[in-house]
Image (cartoon, rainbow, N blue to C red; front, side, top):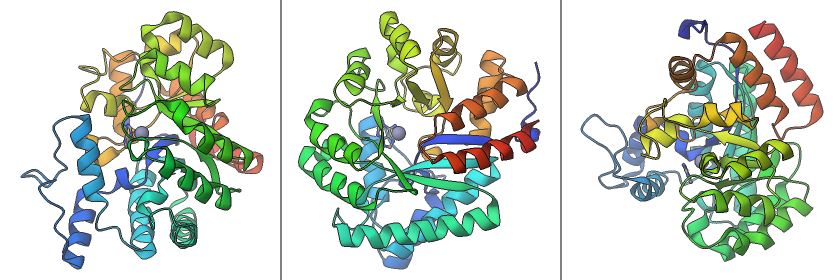
Length: 333
Ligand code: ADE
Ligand code: ZN
């Protein structure tokens, strides 16, 4: 079985939080420029420091404090895409949160989005990576804020903002509390994903499908605890945005070898591979590939199929998909 990390095949990433991709040095530099004290969120090596998932959410929010203007998000987008492109990623869907971009005010959100898209256009020309956005309320901020976020999403839905999701603390409230927001986004033409089955069990994955009509699930890995649900996911073709390195770093599984991604795949579930918040988890897409190769013998041919299947599950329009399929074929065949 071959997979040589130096080959760096072309990759598709469907689950990446834009702020979660911020290199710690970038946030430290921005905080210094603006004389902002972000608190003790870094360890002695300058990496993000957190004790568990809930502490991670606090550190994540603290790290967003220096991101205060559209120009800051322009710089962030370039920094994140540069690292993704270095890892062979040719297409990314990033979660964008109007909560951190002008506090869910539609006018302000438009300005932030404009700056992000402008940076993405530069990255496309200079680094060969394509970005699209999925707007994402933060679950523990509650359903009212999610409604405001959905209005930002509906106002900017189109060829670039292609989806709507939800992240944050899966133990906060119930997914059905967010039905209004998801209906609003869907009616505006947005495709639906939701974080579920990471800190919640199989019932959380069921709720994402039944209550929100999600066609993709962020993580979803704990579906493995209910094999009838696994069969249902396989039958319905629900796509899991699996982030193995994130799950191990946050203590959901002790190692990649013990991670259920391969079992889910073997049972017919459409799995994809992403990094979630790479600098927080000391991960990159290339490292995810290397770890999966070592744990499950996934080889070049397997990763080639994985990239194609991931692109099929992307929320972008058909022309963009066709162009990127050609790119994958040229790069990986
Ligand atoms: N936001 C950023 N990373 C997340 C994760 N792994 N789960 C839920 N919300 C998140
Ligand atoms: Zn996530």
